[in-house]
Image (tube, rainbow, N blue to C red; front, side, top):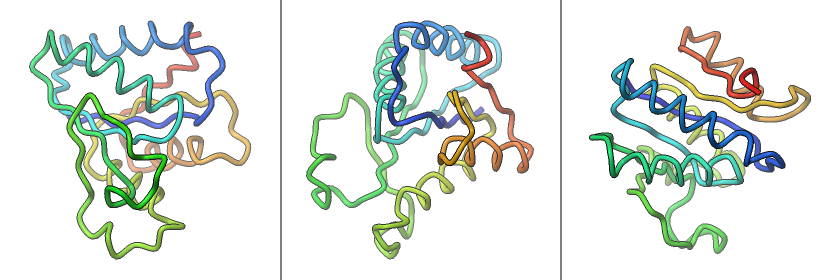
Length: 148
């Protein structure tokens, strides 16, 4: 099973969400056969996912990839050390920078069987649109916000 993620750039209750994320991922790996994970690198939710998956990859035989939206070095804020491997979607170099994150997110969704989301509000944000698109495509959607 391949999983991807979508969540808000800013998360103010990370201490509540991170244990739910961890237990959800452990269940996916141990009981449902999740073995590959794709996620982004923009914001609090992605940072939390990276942290938890880095810890779990020590214990479980999983493959984790940070999927970049920009070629390395194009955005100063992206030049930081990553704990896990990074990849670029095919054709990302041809995509205008203003839509690169959307292109990357759609690429991750095409790869995934399951989407783990944290959407605390639906008004005007990409995380809510990503969740809705995943549901329309028949992906298994796990909403962490419903576990709070």
